[in-house]
Length: 521
Image (cartoon, rainbow, N blue to C red; front, side, top):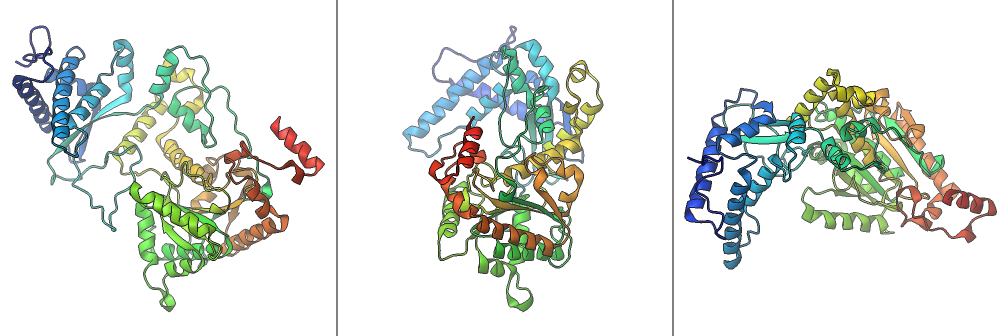
């Protein structure tokens, strides 16, 4: 028997510093029993089965692991893990981690330390247990089509068929607000969230599950002549810029997008960032742009005539050298600048500081929706659709903005990624740059409404590429006429929004000095 009459795991001696042979045998029996039970679960042809969060407890209880007995089990497993790591260290093995440590970490997720049983039972409604057929291994070569995972590092795709028999048990939380509720349970009276990219705020409030009664969205500190923003619907050949999954492999679309970037690279000075929805979308167009076209020259060669092209690498070890190369080419006076191809939600789009001439334009290609084939995205949308129409005491007490459909959440997640990417263009109050949203869907009102407040007054709809290119060209001419390109260097080390600006007052007129004092106050 695995359990003794008191409900504890039988045959395990906690008093030994190292696990005994019988301890290891017992652990192996428990894990094999657990694996057998998971593999015996019937999974339908869809490739997965969705169950309530309580299902994982039933599975663990069937092998003797409960809230009372889990500490005994995890203590012994950690003893075994420590022994393995010690042996690895003595033998100079390169392995610094042990899979048994991961096992303990996952059990502690299901049974958090110092669990309040009543509170935890209430939280379980926000968890789901999923049993799915494991996908076959994905290729990682240059032609791989593995999408960026929206929720984390684990692959959440599933296999539509019976070729792979191995099953995976997942325990996922679909309410990020639980962390905030735990914080509030400690008696915190006031919570202040500040960021330049909280928009769309309705989505943020929904995720936090807190009715923010006070909301503040400020306009940007920069003046209208420092930013140009346009939604471009068509390329130079008149083809519609439609970056949907179904259309991004269209030769007409790929050429329209490529020639658009070639022409923009001619008029945008210094650095230019181009953000794609995913690595799959990026790789698809790059492959097409390297194919010879009319006149024998490729679209990529035409781009490289005006800008040195750098592609954001997927592997972190290659990221720093790529960024060094990009920055060096931008600053090289013998070159006409550089163009960085990157992805939304990647390293370059969130957190990287491309101040001054490092980024004079941001081009957003398509709308970076989360991967619709990601199982967690699909379940999240299903849950939200059900919750939108479910009237509970908790929901009725919250703002109506906290009730959001799955499609609204899906759009807002894309908008957050766009707002983050666009934020690379203005990094201090003397900075300037252009933003081109290359997709006809940016002309839709529901998409425009999700952009950050500071962007909305500047947004222009560009029905033709010719008018867009003339407008962008005139913008940079005006920048030079007004002397903004020289002034931008005064504050190139400042952060976004100009909060850390360093200014020489002697360069100001008296009126400008008064304005500066007013801003400081």
